[in-house]
Length: 48
Image (cartoon, rainbow, N blue to C red):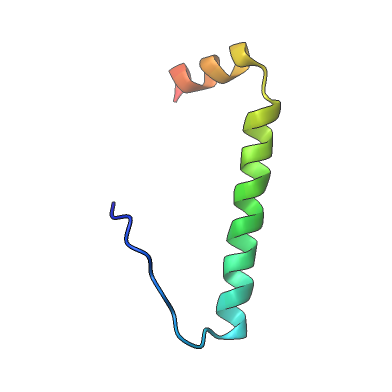
């Protein structure tokens, strides 16, 4: 996986909507991780 920044000139509204949706999902996942108790987190990591 590369960490290169991708720049899109003149993105369409549909693309911007898709990116906003991905960003929103990522924030929801981060919030779930933050609210998880440490023991529950470690259990999930071991099971994964």
